Image (cartoon, rainbow, N blue to C red; front, side, top):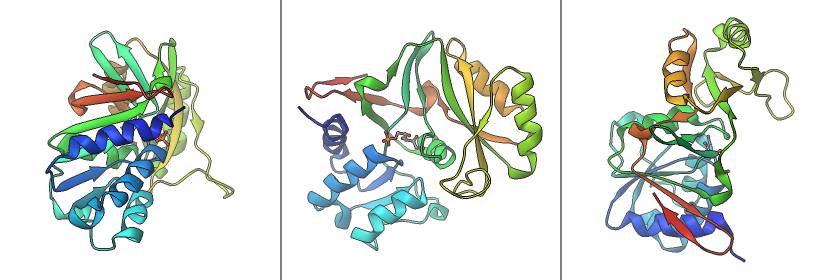
Length: 225
Ligand code: 5RP
């Protein structure tokens, strides 16, 4: 038996080749990748732009001078991240992200990076008719947006913070509401949602935001899309 997160992280490592500036997502799969990067000595010899405080800390506690500020404007040559769900949409594959609450910076890095790779377990391939999608919201608009999402029938659930009072606050000072959306027209819904003032970003990643998707399973099998 293999750990599928490690299987795909190893594959992602092989895609880095001689690229020197690497963008990193957030979550357990990316942590696995960071462990491998450390083992291979990549952390000291590459530069990293991270999508979250969490990933920044993971890298900088091993190699304090390898993280480039997101303010630098440096473009990652490769961006590697994971996802929560992989959906076969009518117009191509769609990724749902933001389980770790880092969707905004993840989307910024995906948009601007030269080559975008998403890795995840085969079990994250999703064929249901409705899916949980995180939405990042400016705090002052929280109640109004929540009520509008409820009116639209999206069953909003504010993301709670671990043990603290009030909603989870993201690295950007915003809050997250999880909503439930039909899987058939997610990329159109994404545009509709971002038309609501106060919604900063959604966890829906359509075709323009990825180049390669890699899934792996406990047998060590890999599929590349
Ligand atoms: C964080 C994300 C993560 O990529 C997603 O939640 C998958 O996480 P994990 O690697 O822990 O399964 O979108 O915002």
